[in-house]
Image 1 (cartoon, rainbow, N blue to C red):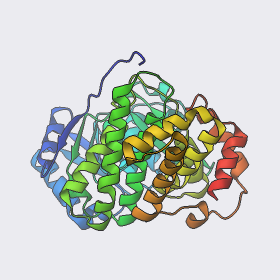
Image 2: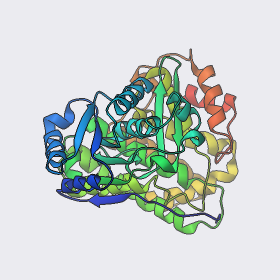
Image 3: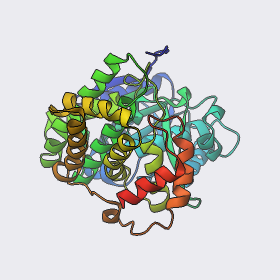
Length: 387
């Protein structure tokens, strides 16, 4: 196990009817930028409840709405402009990971002298940020409890992740009831995203990280158990609660500290989203089983790792070779049958290989040092197989 320094400073208020904690924002700020996406929080009544809490606490607020599912740098720039013009001193994101990611770079951009896209390209430039708070409405990215953000510039077909301790939320409210209205498609995509985060941490070359591996397996089994339940019964509180907490734990560092590994499936999917603006979780569900099969064929020493996954998560038995193959197939069928997700890129509207070479080149830079190192040609082949 590697050395590490442990810090997850976000205060979490988890469970039913936790919005009253928004009054705690008053301890640090009096003028807030309220960031959200489309009209879903207004339809559900959450918007009105949030506004009432802010008003009762005497907190002034200005709105920045319309954040996209793959948040655009243009929306971030708009939010930064609003912050500067209104002397905003805190940011409150109400939504899923896309909204929270945008809010993070808005919070950092508001105190940065240059263009916020520079902060996306180089997280080391984030030296400070306005305090950030969130009310989570979709279990997926874990952005409510981590230091990461992913922003797109579709004019350049670019989607990049950035990171800084400065943009970790001060406080996040996690009420599973706020996810009841999430569509089946987004529930499935969110589950795939948190499973992918866990896979990226689970398949590591660091030896001796037994506990981290076991924690990953527990999160994966939680997603496998409760994902289909939440899809079929959106108001099942137990399912929504378990998925919500699994999403936070999948990427807040608990699973990766001491067993760090460079991620690979996410950089590959970011290129799909950058070029085709597809749903992130669906792209991950398509790529993950293809990547699993490709890496064990490229490096046969990894068959044992995949077999361990099959035994400990899927309760499979047999030789390493048998369990390895069965585990990959179980993963694929879980996404396509249990969660009703697309199985190929063609099913999400990608019908040719036109951009694959450029995408593979960009993704290869992000995959350096991954569990099984992949070249541009390797990544191109994975895209081909996923087509």
